[in-house]
Length: 84
Image (cartoon, rainbow, N blue to C red; front, side):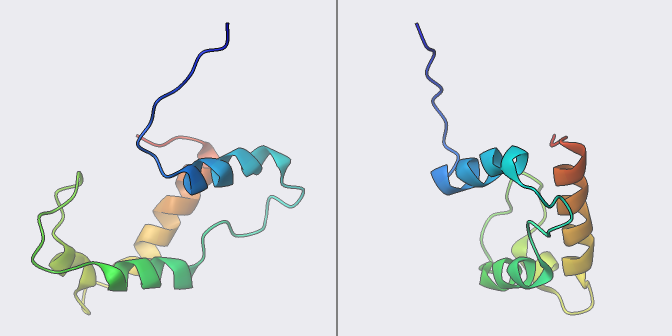
């Protein structure tokens, strides 16, 4: 009997991750800088921090320039297959 998995993860994200094994070109960027910038800019300051405990205002601070660091961490996670 096949098992079923219940998850709160967006199905689009699951589909994208499942495509990793099917990719012919592993050098292709899965997530690029513009995507990280767009997501970071969409954060609403003043809301409660997420699981990481970092408030949106800190991530959006001009002097912080967190986008490049986040992009490196995202690529490290995808390339190593480790997310914790």
